[in-house]
Structures are given as C-alpha cells and as structure tokens.
Length: 315
Image 1 (tube, rainbow, N blue to C red):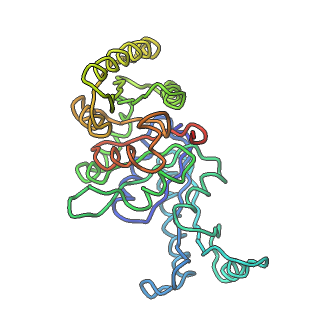
Image 2 (image 1 turned 90 degrees about the vertical axis):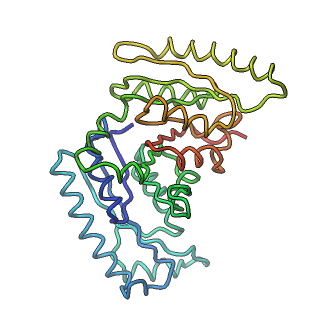
Image 3 (image 1 turned 180 degrees about the vertical axis):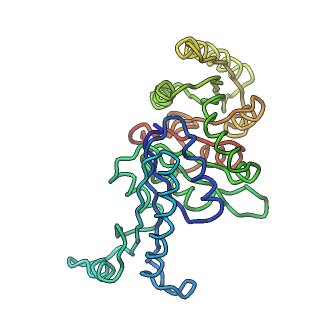
C-alpha cells in the first residue's frame, strides 16, 4: 500500500513537513508530487498570471522531487491546472487554457477532483495529505480539500493532522513515520468492506500491536446493547486469532456510544500510532461517504488516519 504514493502539496511549511516524512513510511518506493493551480478563478491572485504560477510550481516541485530522490525514493512532479467545466462540442475554454499554460495536465473541475483524477490516471494506491482546517477551536475542522478527498478519492487516503506535525521536528516526524504501524487501531463493523481493511493490514510490512475495535452505536435497551457487545467481542476474538502471528500482537476492544468519539478515545488511551478504517460498510461505517464518522475521526484524532477503500459504495 505504501509503495507508490500521491502527495499533493501547496508548498506550505506544513506540506513540506509531511514531505520530509514520506521516506519513513514502511515500504515507500515511489512518490508522485502534484500541485494544482486553480485556473477556474480570475488570474489576479497575488498579481501573478496562471503561467507564472505554473512555472514557479514546477521549479518548487522539481526541488522537492530532488530532495526525495536524494533520500532514496523515486520521485516525479506534476503541475496540474484546473479549468471550469466547459460547454459545447469544441471545448473552447479548455483549448484556450492549453494554448497559454504549460501545465503537465489540464483537468476540468475543482482541485479535489483534479487530485483524484491524477491518482486514477497514474494508478496510485495511496494518497497522503494533511488536514489543516481553520476554526475558532484549533483542529475542529478538516481543510476543505481533505474533506472533499474523503468523498471523491477512490484510492486509500492517509490523513496527517497538523497538530501532530507541529509537535515534532523533522527527524522526529520521520522516525514516527517509520513506526506508524507499530500500534494500529483497526475499526470494524464486520462487513465485507471492513474485512477488506483487515486484509489490507495483513499486507503491510511489519505491523506490531493491533487494537481491534467495534463500537455498538445503537440499541433499544441496555440489555440489547449489552447483547450486541457480547456478540461483537466473540467476533473480534475470531479476528484476533486470525490476525496474530510472529511479531503481531492483537487485542480486542468493544465499546458503546458515539463511534468517532469512542474510537479516538481508545486510540489516545493505547497511544496508537495510526487509526485504520474502511471507507464503507453497514451501520455507521456506511456513512463515511457523506462524512459522518470519517470526518469526525479525522478532525478529532491526534494521530494519522488511514481510510481504506473497498470497491463501490453499498446501497
């Protein structure tokens, strides 16, 4: 999963810090860097033309690619320009943009769509990006691009929280990335999609401790909730026996209440290095596409969140 990575960057200090940690991700081999120039808006931002912004982006991406290459990774850079969806058979707006902007790709649509389209065209299995939302309460929101990528991207998505990055220096964060699989919280609702996340975990190089968690989010009575928790514990024990092996220790955790709150609380309690969850399923995991659980987990968690895609959403 971590072998081939798409990394969108806006050249902020925050993005640079994530870039510096990519080499530490277990099994990382190739990184495609992408910067999107939003040409759907008037080209007056900062007094720069679209072409000037593209040229500057190419220069910066080139330096970042050389940095990664110097750290032993294969690295390529793509500058993408977005344009408003055009109408008419001639595609005049798109052709006009192509004539005066030397971007590597020009894609009709918004920035999140362009990033998702690059991942699709390049066949990249993992998208790594930050969650840098702004609000009155620090960390309460996902950035709009990260939020939309949860909805639009069809590849796996690793979300890095800004608060975590601010606490760590370059070497400390790189070391954290090397240890990102040392203590993983894996959520499950026992659906086939959640099972796919478990199978993905098995393919990752060297997971250490795995906390298997199920949250009972509904029940008419306390007795019903307790019965569901007992049943979930039995299923988790089966998964634990399936997962455990040389170098892997698994524990079982069943809770009730708000899924996102309970998942994040458990992750903090066991000092997890990453939360891993499926993109769909039955019950509360099925709400991911419209943002309910995944957005809450990603905005509240202090550690990276890995969202594993598993086919098309279920009806």
